[in-house]
View 1 (cartoon, rainbow, N blue to C red):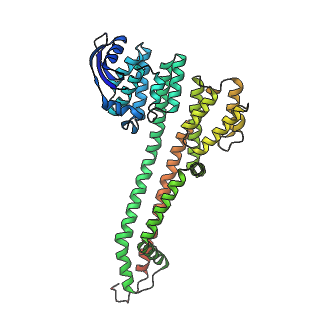
View 2 (view 1 turned 90 degrees about the horizontal axis):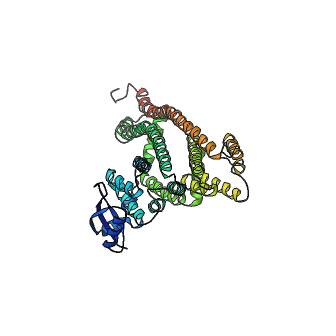
View 3 (view 1 turned 180 degrees about the vertical axis):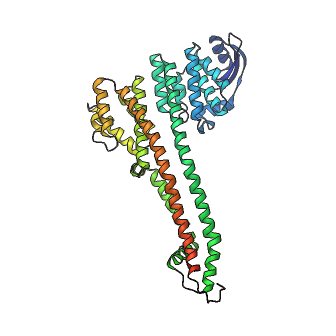
Length: 408
């Protein structure tokens, strides 16, 4: 079906624009007039059609979370004020600064004008709007509380962005230290130390053990660098292919949760995300099995996803949520007990959201603690290695024969 670009004015004289799928331009004009708009320009837009198909190549780039949160907040405010959905989307299109996101919203507006529900129009752009997002929008449309759902999604997006920002900012300093330390070591190993080693070899004196170890390491990497480099490439290719299999993903994600210190933070993050997503869906009227299925897709850890599948299987057999969690190695007893109480009292979604709040605070605290531990550990490791280099270079100087012909 052809795609048309249009410009029109509403009853107040405000300009709107967008795209619409229709058989002819006359159909577009008729639709606009039926919605209370006065058409100004209607023309074929093949370029927009190509962008829209398949979610669009332009939409392949991920939309920023902050832009999505602003979209949710603005759309909620406009709908709460009684402005029709199509007009609300047209207003947001003109106010969105991101050209990429503007194209997405314009396509959504066109689909809604063509008769699609908002959830259906959003689901055509899975790289921008997740399964969780579309499911919550669908429940809001069905229940008649779309503006409330959009507010919750805005809060959810902002919380996600805040947690990610905290984790990133906490890792900046250690990353800079690692890069700086590695660069300094590379310069010492490739420029400074080879010249000093050559001087010691010219003196023809027996070198101390640390110096001999350092020379052996340099000669080993210097003469076999191509084998090491090739082996690393093969290892990376093998790991890449293995980690893209279902078994590889599950194994790697399970190993991640076992890493000292870091694994504990990652596990808490997964529990918080599980509780937040599951609780939000239940609160908005989504069935428990559908909520678990969506929650499973949202979680990034394959090992945790497999545990969620077990919950779904047990529920289909007549069990509750808490029962299959008792045998899980992921969910702590306190979480299982809270979920069991939530099921008994009929307030499962409230309990899950409390768990999410508690674990999000724990994640924030654990990240700060981990950062405080990582920084001194990195300094200690770098100091140890630099000390080894310095000692390896100084020991031969201390052992030089002052009567030798080297001038010492």
